[in-house]
Image (cartoon, rainbow, N blue to C red; front, side, top):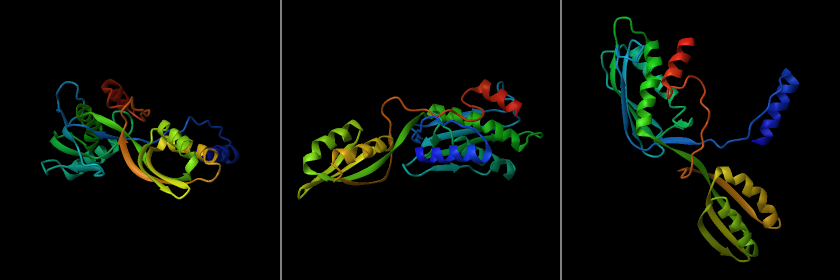
Length: 246
């Protein structure tokens, strides 16, 4: 949050003499596959500079299932299989839009090697094969939402509802309780802070509210993106050049 930014900024300046600036805070989203995609990178074929073959299938999983990884035992040494699996999880920390990918099934469909193959070949090749499979599966960006429960004076109902609707809230329940009204709604986490700042004025200080995390929902308009960190396997030439320099 903004307060934590100020604390970090002051600490770095005071204790280490480092001046920093922060960009705007951004709500952390996730990505979920929307379909199924497959791709294979074959050893010795044009465009594959690594001494390895790797192929993946990416499928949509159940909501809340996380990342499930599947492989059958084959001819590779266990250290190579371990390198592939570890790289799968590392690669899916940044999806097509830069957010962590979850709720999917990743299957290792093809693997191959030659006498000079090393684990590093699989670590370098896996992001190329996996991200192309993910690109073919496609993803949707999902934003976090909160369940917001309010108890407000009855005569402030209209003004409060107007603010909630403008904040993309979805009303779930409205119950009169004496001279008060209880409202239960779902609201995007990105909008929650702004609403909470307005509620004391709207309710003359007589309102009360509590919120709790309620999961993720797909974003229906233009999805936000997060800048990638490190070599970008979605840009093959850039990726190969960056990995060669590392």
